[in-house]
Image 1 (spheres, rainbow, N blue to C red):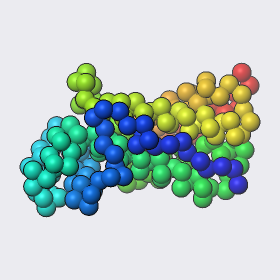
Image 2: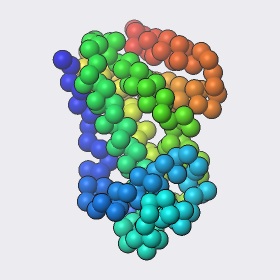
Image 3: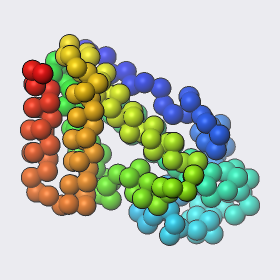
Image 4: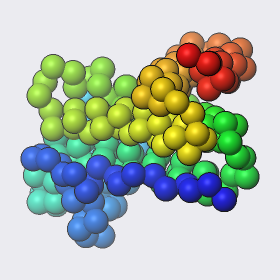
Amino acid sequence: MVSARVRSTPQSRLVPGQIDLDRLPKAGRRILAASAELFYQRGIGAVGVEEIALTAETTKKTIYDRFGSKEGLVTAYLQQRCRIWREYVADWLQRADSTGTDRVLEPLRALLSWMAKNDRGCGFVNAYAELAGTGHAGLPVIVEEKRAIRELYAQLLTEAGLDRVEERATQLGIVHEGLIQQLAAGQHPAAEQQAFALAALVVAAPY
């Protein structure tokens, strides 16, 4: 089977303001789980620390003790979401029996499955809309996630023996992001079909 390896998660490249998720105690994991659902469904600005504490059955003090601030909690939410997606697609690739150039399209197939339970679109784009221009510690995590998508396509293109890998990977990343927005925000009935058609063209292009 072709390798399903996905490069290291952002937790291996922590920058100031980011959280080491592997060292979170049980209370911290419970807080993060509660806040992740609230942030994704309602938005970062709309959810206060008090509500998170109530949902997680803890106190504001415990949240600040574990994450330092709401900014720290939001950053951890983004880190965790990035990790969960990358583990999801790695598992998807491990189970997929596709080969060659068809395997390059597997992240799109994984995305469709992922979005069945994530109907508010891309959590990172949603977060960026609220955090852009603020200097928030979570912004580098968003950049990392988008870079990781391109790297994943580059990895699969390389394994398929194709050339112009960076160019194709960038184009596939654009198709990937566009599919999310057209399915969630655009509600476009042909988005899936057209995205796969575009992706196939990118893979087959002779350059």
